[in-house]
Length: 88
Image: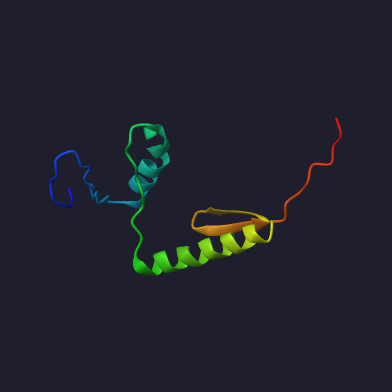
């Protein structure tokens, strides 16, 4: 556990995993913890953090332009919005 112990405060738990497959298994199963106030995030090295910041900036700019944009696997995916013109 990381940090000082304070009454009624949550603490960070830092876990090192021996191989990338175990890490990916844990991250894939993290949505099953929804509603339990437990959050799992991948710790990034400074180089990866800088790259992710650039991708986030690209997404923000694309959304301001009215485009559909998300981040998947630390890469920005940007597409033009397609309007549904089917009349039912």
